[in-house]
Length: 439
Image (tube, rainbow, N blue to C red; front, side, top):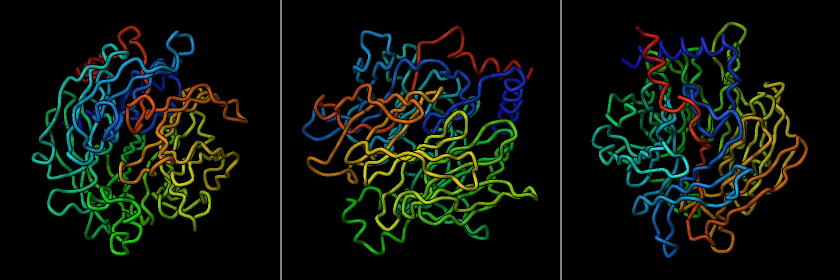
């Protein structure tokens, strides 16, 4: 069934390209199968937020901010939907029709599905509490839209809480379909997982690697002093046959390669990632023989100081890449016109710490949030927790608004997703389009 939907998705992608659909820009961890795209002015920003003891209701929550400059509520929180408790809220992802937003917690493994029929007022639609029982995995991290499905990349496992893990497939309605372990053994993989990136035209899925529950739930100061624990980070990426959901080749990419960004321009066959511990940009691409390869193409900051590259965001033009480094609170812009030799062309300190970055479809607006993991964030006065919005004129980031999540008693601001009011049948109609293509 998954292979069937993959074939249909490739057909749909080809039709959209032939019809002159706009180039798909980047949202953090967004999937090319999310067809109801916000290609104009984003209207809302949804921030998956970690609860903090002694702050507000102390609960993890989905915070919605009005980001439409024409709105009287521009730059203000217009909704906050708490889900109860604190379970290390982390990443989110849309279903392919953009009707639902899935959000996961890395500690208690709960998954929350929000209905965005009215994106100004998300409604908690369903909670999945048996992810571990169904999959054997721990730490649902990346939520990646497939046609009628959601792929969930986990970070760990229930057996020993190490980094060996896999990918789970669910229906959009929240029913478990299948599981796929990360490659190990003869393929040379370490079994670790982190992000998912799919290039439908190439029929490939690319995965990256991080660390297991035992490490990511540990205090960062304690972790970096533990020599044995520091050995337990991923050093691999894998290319999969997407339709078959089977790994084809494993690359040695030392230093925990995290976020994956494909160029989805027709004919392009490359993706970029950043390694957290070695502060490098890596390129995964086809060589002149048509074989997939991975190579180190640039350095991010001063690796000796472990700036810890985290989130990255690729421009719709595929000529620039934003790279955030958590430890020094800095964002850097790389010119990637020559993907084999990216060059830093700009940098700006955002705060004491910075994690996520998302830019608008036209590249004129860039947003940042600050939290990485509850036990890895800065302590005391250095614990910045905010959403900040900038205009980008091609030369300088100019602040538009800043929301202090601690002052507003919201918590730790983590993952962001854009949304807008449904236009025509865009939201909720994608599956019917796919189904019509198979009849």
